[in-house]
Image 1 (cartoon, rainbow, N blue to C red):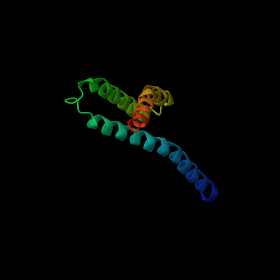
Image 2 (image 1 turned 180 degrees about the vertical axis):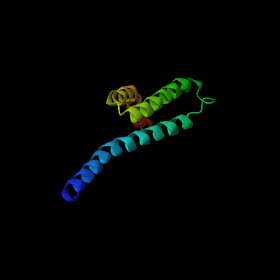
Image 3 (image 1 turned 120 degrees about the vertical axis):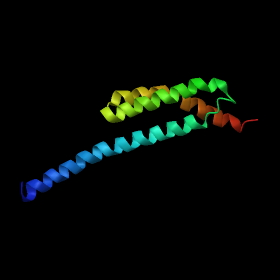
Image 4 (image 1 turned 45 degrees about the horizontal axis):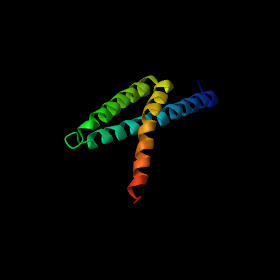
Length: 99
């Protein structure tokens, strides 16, 4: 390929890469957040946190698989699993300042 056709192909590849790279980075970031949340759980202080730890581990493993396979359904599954936890944390954070 020469000239214009080559630059269009190169540009197309770059655009395709950016479509893959952004979700890849977002999934890596989500995995890092889950690792941080997992490491912050102190099961000696709160033994009941083992269920939350298991959820974090499961979701992180699913996100790894989703990232490798580019499976949007797995990402949706993860969102559905963590949404109630997010809502509970948001509610608890709001209740901290209440008398």
